[in-house]
Image (cartoon, rainbow, N blue to C red; front, top):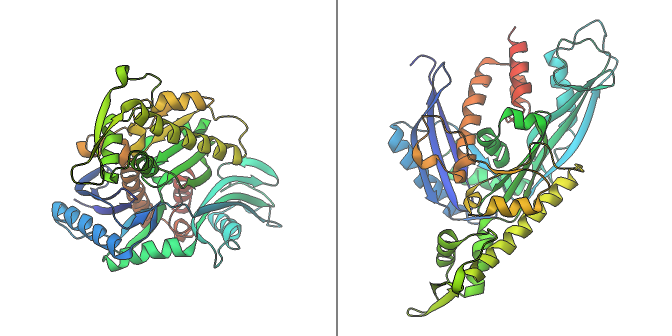
Length: 414
């Protein structure tokens, strides 16, 4: 196939490692030619806790995907999350420019660089720089300043960072696993690629990806990212609560959660019992399903309250019109939408990706929203980077502002 590109993504989470290898042509339709999902080890709350274990599971997942694809992997887009993600909103301006000369791509590149150049320190590592808004001569609300006449251009950027240790340890795990990294991509940005529509992003929406070790929150306003953060609580904490309450193995607690978990308002009749193993070879405990459900419900309710607090901390005094979109493995929990509606002051839906025909049935699951979104992300950015100047790469090769990027790319190539 002419102009054929290969794309490799590795989604490293607390509960699983998913590797996808895709192929696309000029029509930009992606075909998944290799995939693997294996249980994760060596990760806690999105952070590397055991380098050798992460290396091993990544190698296992990559080997299986490469075997299916029949090719060696290309430099990978690697999904990243973790409780040490933080952010800052920053402004920068280019003043006293010639009014008669239209704003060009170089001007935009310069002002964006200025918005984040002072933010990279020994304490923080920049992951993404996301232009939220532009102004020309003091007039904000400009989506694309290129070609306009102005004496000054200003940008407000959302700068997403992590501590160097988190990024470097994940990068080192990839290196010793034999993986070349194209870019690190924050999980919520990847998930948004697969579960949110452009209309939702334009009117405003909150996307929450509940993973194994963390919950990723991304707020979109007027078509661009407004706020991103990571809450260090996820499905693994629910499993731990069950394990402690019933003095059982984590594996048995996870099985009970998946098989019997339900956070809807209805209750089982007659206190239906389930049997869980204890820490002795012949020890079992009969557990009331309603008690199990209450444990799960309390943790989920707490998590949703933290999400609501996060939205308020982002400066929003009311819920965005697009509502709340829940995705990730825990989003499959029966009754979650109902429970969230009791807490969230707006509409709630479960974010299930609109799967094209080329997506294998195994990936048609909210648990793989970030993996599939990562593939969308990688394919799009590979093609854009082939046809554009260095401006696509100045922001850590990870600009998630798709509309801005596509406009900018087309302007540069004119």
